[in-house]
Length: 487
Image 1 (tube, rainbow, N blue to C red):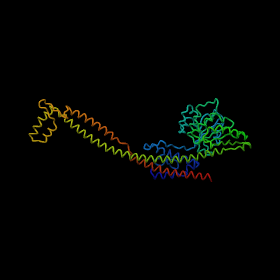
Image 2: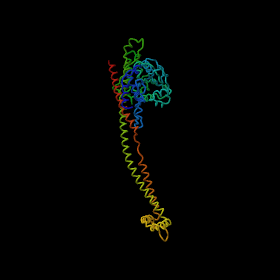
Image 3: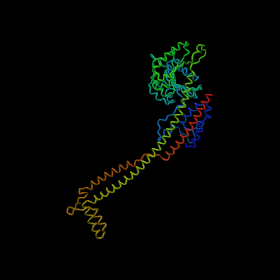
């Protein structure tokens, strides 16, 4: 994970790879997938396998115990587009048209009461409830709504139409009023999902219940936090052939939305309808902004690429700063531990001194018993005098307490207090206990980096710096793709 290895990795992760070419990926799709893989897997070989010795992703680095960056999250490799509107507004029909495959049942309210993700994959498959939450782990909180788990699905299609490989389309329940009951709180579910999508398409049916209360409530709630994500369209415009009728419907929808939307200065309500065989000449003259919808989706994809590259830059900067902070904290802790060590040895020395005095007092008290003192003096002092041991005699006289010759008891010592030695021992024992307590508290060191930790942090730094080079190469590929599109 050092600088040399990371340098090789950056070259292998920068430009177009043979594996990507074989899969027919667009430049945008490659970049989104590469960023996602850098967070999840790290730098890998061009064929998708890990480098020798393994690799590490940005998420794993951020979760290191020494860094603990909880605000680093894996960006999604596809743009999420949610479509809302009243029943029969053409949401499912648009999805089928966009991907070029009939994966969604159209026109039946009972069959569109749930949420359905439509995504691209290598094999046609349908996922239900828990499988969908496992597939889209970022929406697992949606399960908090009672009755919704059984009404969430995922349709995986092999279609390569348009930019479908970069988009996850989310079909929402058709909104109606009256006696229609949903198995879950449909408006609150839509509002919750809005936090997890990049774009929201609002379809209004000119001949149905475009202005139903549930639709208006959902639009109003979404405008509270996600006004910039919302795009409005009058769908099925070809079913209103007369121009003045279309204008009347457009005015009605606009008037009802006026008090509910926040970005009214940028408000647009283009008419759209799906192309179909046998269209009359009058229908051919009806303005159709269907391609604008596709362009809005493409724009969201391009903005997501830019956002993900910026997020990657910010997250790498967070990691580098966190590494610096970890080193600064380690330096402070080492300095504090050194100061603690000095204090600890000082308290240790004081403890030894107090223990020595306590031992001296204990010995004094032991030999301060009258009979013991008399016995010692009667036997040792004559011996010391006979042998002319002046030092021994002086020591015994100084150490052994005086004894009253009449009573045979020791005279009052320790400031004239009877049994003062015992009190002194208690006091010294208390002082020694306090010193030991303070010493133990002082010797508790803060954890510091080991040599292995420091080496790991140095590896992370070099690795993240190489990720910056990969990011620059991805930006060059993105700009190259934009130039190709213009050409």
